[in-house]
Length: 174
Image (cartoon, rainbow, N blue to C red; front, side):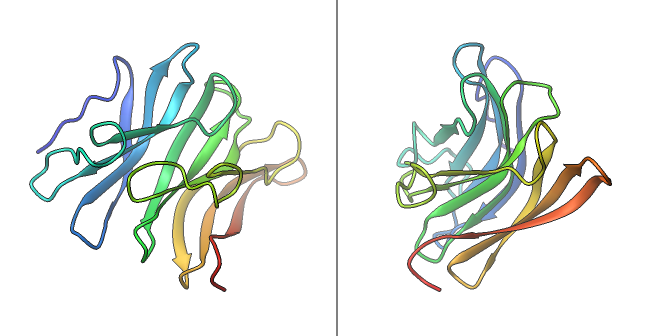
């Protein structure tokens, strides 16, 4: 068993993936502090022996602020591309504990830095419902090598919470 403390507050992992080298990736969120981003996506990479991988991010952990300012970001999906790039998918809300989130995905290079070739600076935020409705990714999978399909919920004024599916193009391949 491995316990990783990301912050002095709330830390949670929702999903895991294994890369081609047998390293374990875990994704969720962490309370990083008021004025610091509030809740950011947290991605940890562990070596096969359970220790944090010092070659990834900051001693094995990467925090990603998907939304602006003090947002409420979380990752509900993680997958590793054949080239070692890591895609995390979840949601970004402009403030904590509100029902105003959007689908969000980020792609990391194998060392944990954001991939500037994906979205805007490595992050893509996709509103799937109008106005301040709640959109959240709960699962993601690759379609071929060049697309990520994410599914979750989107809050529609006429019908309430509906199922949504979004496909992100990941790069040069079709």
